[in-house]
Length: 485
Image (cartoon, rainbow, N blue to C red; front, side, top):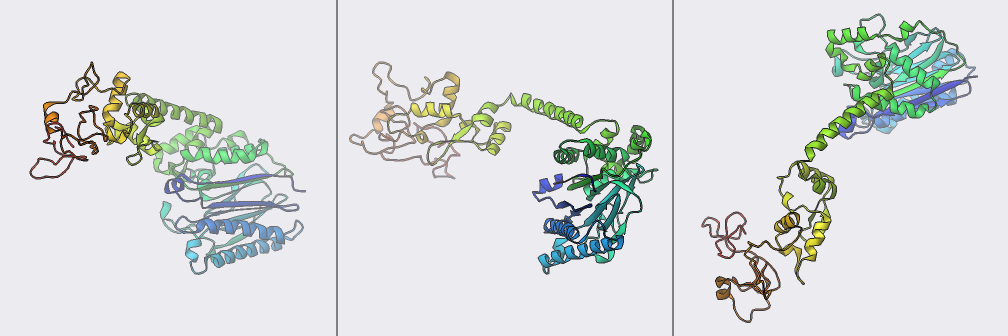
């Protein structure tokens, strides 16, 4: 009694992923003794807590029906119970919302499926579709929308009790589909509004066959909704429930019925009404031509690989191996090497001229520079840019031969310039400087005495008459510096 096969899934839409908001769709399915109850609810995007409302509506309404309906109950009592379930759900939402009921708007469509019979309650723009025993697809409900076009058409949510509809479908049903508008607009696309059939039989029959014959149908339905999303211009949340009653026999229609719309018709409609194609997913058009979801995914994957290859080839002209995979920089306070964040790496990878790019190094380069420092010397005291350039050009951190910091080749002692000798003051052995060249170690240091200012210092005063302060904009007038300080 009740040989049911069913599955359901709700997936967040691309627009909500971009906006960093939650999925506002909900669904719930429960099997009773001899019947099954399922509901879908779509929280209105303009309502702040619509995701909470949709979950409350679907879960509470289904639970109420399971607790108050039996397989032997008369039709009118089942409909009364569904009506009471809607009232129960609405009251729970009002209690949750208190005075902010407009922040809790949601739709609700519910079906009780019992031995080929479908009893339903409906409020909003979600919907129910039946696969009848004669093999035809029929819309059980119609979307409840106000006047307007597209997104400007208002939806009548659950709070509008005067819009509620409760009824029993008038045909024997083999399978039932419940969908929020994100999926419903794909199976009843505006593109087919003026055709002999308004439903996409090809896509509906594909969904039905996968649930009927599939092994892991829960995983399949999750993947199916995720895979079709990129092909849909409408990036709404999507919910789909499929329930099949295996005890109800089905008489198939001719093959042409399940192949509607044909390739030729789709191409013709797309050329005549390109704007109407907004609600027709590319994946539906592909499935009309007999392409499976897996094959579609493979096609998309090839495109992704192609794009990635182009990006990789472009990236070969920039230091991507340093910045993206192993790049780091020196912490200006601690002097420690720190790996770049993903965002920093991407910025420097695709913009080599960005500020700070010249001091990006690998950890091995950092370790080599540290190893070359004199005792008591800090990496913060040296010219990092020059050291990195030396390593990459010559494989060594030694100072270039044309530098002002030449050492005596025979004694190893520095060769002071005349200016350095004249400026040196005997006995000064306790001060340090990290802006000038030290006459003892022949490089910038903080251990020995500065020969220019005879004290601990870091910069000279700029000679520009409009500046007259320490700066990095103008050239220093000190003859031993002669650079931007």
